[in-house]
Amino acid sequence: MKRTLALIAVLPLLATLNAAEAKGLKVYVSVDMEGISGVVSSEQTNSESREYAAARKWLADDVNAVIAGLLAAGATEIVVNDSHGGMRNISPDDLRPEASLISGSPKPLSMMAGIDGTFDACVFVGYHAEAGTAAATLDHTISGSSVYEIKVNGVEVPELGLNAAIAGYYGVPVIMLSGDAAACRQAGSLLGDNLVTVAVKEALSRTAAKLVPLPESRKRLQEAARDALARRDQRRPFRFDPPCRFSLTFQNSAQAEPGEMLPGVTRASARTLTFSTQDYLEGVKILRALIALALAR
Image (cartoon, rainbow, N blue to C red):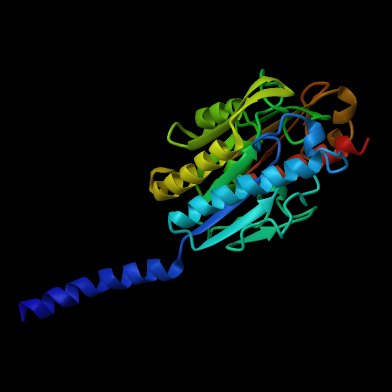
């Protein structure tokens, strides 16, 4: 009788474990290019440059190393979002078959297209530091030609912060980031010290860096991805509490002029536009629309 009662008590726990196992472990990977192993110049990230083909291969190798690590830690579904420039940098032929690829642009949420609440973790690969960072490889924020600074709720945020908060909007924690040392420092400062980071280079200037040898870089990326996913429960989603107050400062005053005409947008200074939203995702879409207007001038 006691054994029967004990079995009855354990059944709900077994059902819960079986349900978790059936659900699997789903990971979202957003991939930029400036922070990829070997990359130091915009000539390498420009699809029209003769140096692009080599950098495109480095990009795929970095991503595949991360995928290998995630699979070793038990990932059952991996979605990779190509997030640089025209967003067609990863050739489907070069990507490991265990992962699916989101390719091309424009697409909803841009660098975070496809993210939703079904994912268990998020990884950023090849990310860079925000505009104005000293000794950082190809530093910029969304648009190097137009954006000087972005703040949310008074906090200056790089792309990694904006995107981490999109993942957080859906309750998904960022567990790992790779890039240059400056990007890794910014990520740790903003997203928390327990974030797993992999510095694949140390910038000496905006277009020069001391590179980690490629085989060693891929080894570190694979090990970090495996460890980060294994420790995912230590990470919490990164969020901005509403109301979300956005501040967008452009490189010059002319770039702020068209956005000033939109309802709800205030021109706080010659180069700065501000607005507030209750919904963070709505705010990000307005932010990108303002940047697109500036680029259209």
